[in-house]
Length: 183
Length: 183
DNA sequence: TTATTATATATAAATTATTATATATAAGGA
DNA sequence: TCCTTATATATAATAATTTATATATAATAA
Image (cartoon, rainbow over all chains, first blue to last red; front, side, top):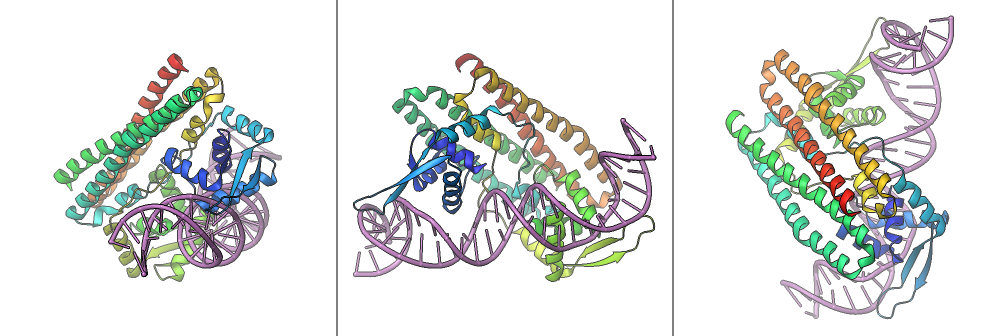
């Protein structure tokens, strides 16, 4: 699925592997992410499949860049992917819930401490979502009015993160209360 | 992290690779899962590390089973893991949100259709959570009163799924409305 | 001044995960 | 009766991901 993420971003305009990583980290990190090494490998594979092309760009005081552009074939593949509904929810992994599941043996104090740590971490994610991410979307909307529809969907994904993190925090508050009473 | 999932389950009692897969599918699938092939490979590695032991059990009318048991070393490792807080939220991947992010180019009809499909899928997951999973936890609690604390935590993880799926459905409803109005 | 981070590329090795394949008996459904 | 699923084990091949490593210049912070 990383190929579609890269095609999706390259559909906005040409950019380097390094650019793609930065952009991914600023926009989709909460629901899609990749390491640089994987990005470079996937870009190579996409080029081999003629989904993208690339050219080296000399830079004066920085290392040279390789800038990638999507091809018509790439656009077609991307279009096919976004038009095709997913008919199953992909299973995800939540390390904290797994740990919680097996935590009957730890002390009440430690358990409460870990729940509070999780709450703080989610609170921070929620703050960043509401400030930094919202600002990025607003700023991009301002600078690129032709991406109004895109911005609507970007905002929808940001909002998803907001609603889910708020739900997680509510759940953590509820769980802390139950553990305090009954554990 | 699969090793800890397996150690966690084996801490409840001896079981086979096949048993572990069944139990994982019935209890933690919403936040932790693994394929049989990975389970067998990881059991082998755990045995090599003396975290578990195993013995073959002949069966009359079924293939023989290999039953695994946790060792004292395995219990110590598990204990260390559950007692150690996670200080970062692991990044997850949500294929649907990635697709939504890049869906400005599809038709309003298709987009609404995909949002409704997602809603239906989450509704089904929520129903199963509230019925089948809740029943499994209730039944296990009945049969094993000594696992009362465990059941409290299992119920907390189930509740987490409930709260998050309800939040996702709310978000989908909100997003369908916004797309209807503004897309 | 030195260490760290940013800007850049990229591969290799290791780890985790999935799919495919293999073997084998029993039970259930069409 | 035959096909599929359940019950069982397990490995091989492939794919995805992470960590490590390498090279190199510029900017920033201590």
